[in-house]
Image 1 (tube, rainbow, N blue to C red):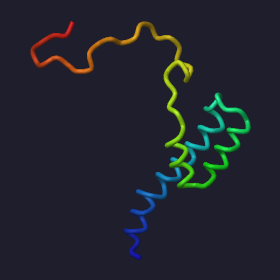
Image 2 (image 1 turned 90 degrees about the horizontal axis):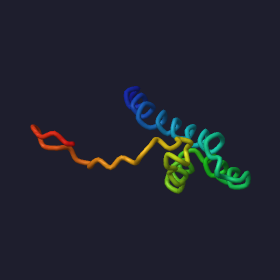
Image 3 (image 1 turned 120 degrees about the vertical axis):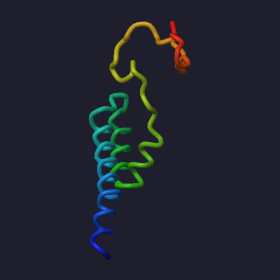
Length: 92
């Protein structure tokens, strides 16, 4: 195979999958304080299957909201509309 295809495979497949795999392991070990040691061990065994385990882990883990991640009450919830005003109008 040509060296260009090896370099492209490395840059676009191998490195991103390795980063995803390492982030999943880091997340299980250090960031998931809601898991018991048995569940944490189960997730680690799942994630140790490099590519498929990391994809399954990302798919089945619940995403935590701000209060669950340690971001305390930042004041009132933002009630501004999700869309901006047309050009020339000021939203108030």
